[in-house]
Length: 385
Image (cartoon, rainbow, N blue to C red; front, side, top):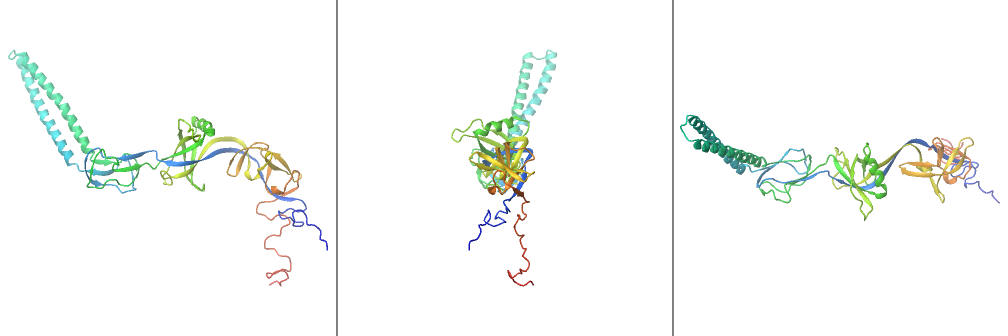
């Protein structure tokens, strides 16, 4: 017996896609007018803004180490102590010389005073007064040198206490207590890396350089985000500091340097991250859902809903950049129009549609869990419990 052919869609009156009687079930979304931020994603590397190799300024025996490896330290914190005794001896010698020359100067000044009075009485020759005056000046010059020697000895003594030059995280200790350390040691005592704020280096294609430099020249900061490799989590937000002074001819890119707060420590030196840079912001832009945009031989297009008769019309578009689930529309759509976001594969220009809410049952489909009267849990024909 010959059976009639099924309706369009292969599912009878209710098609597989939820169409009924030639009417396609679709979802629609409104085209909006809003600010559109254009971000560019780049490969980036976390780079400290400051890294210091802590070295001793004097030679001596390392007495005590006052830090733990991996510890966060503040600028001025005591890191290590060098045996101060040789430097204390040098300081004492300098102070002794200073005291001696001060006593000589005091005595020379008293003699000069007496010689001056005798000269007024014409009891001594003027030459003797001049000689004494010269001696006083010699002692005064010696005192200047002595005070400088004392200051130098005090400075050398202060260098026996090694302090942190900046706030950051200390690395692994390079020298243990008891060893002789010198100011010429290449490895130093320890390396301190600034962690907060922290830097970020990325390279941007030369086609985007003009836009970035234009924003840098403006009054507003250029926003930068660091995202994990899976682009699931934002690790930090900051601002762009500057660009390199020349484009790399090998890669055709320009290096960018950004600064990001890192109080929670999510960013670590030499960590690879995805760097997002805000290169442009368009105000009152026409924005549509990215799911509504289709691609064909003639370029981008979308189906626009005609609400008066529940039909759709095909509209060719000129699109801009895509950010997440939004796409910038340059030509072809106006704010307030509605575009089809789901069910476009069954549409043609002028087709009748029925707009449904996402998640609801399409027309002609049986709601999940409903059974015709007389069907029980056991299947068709089973008695109701």
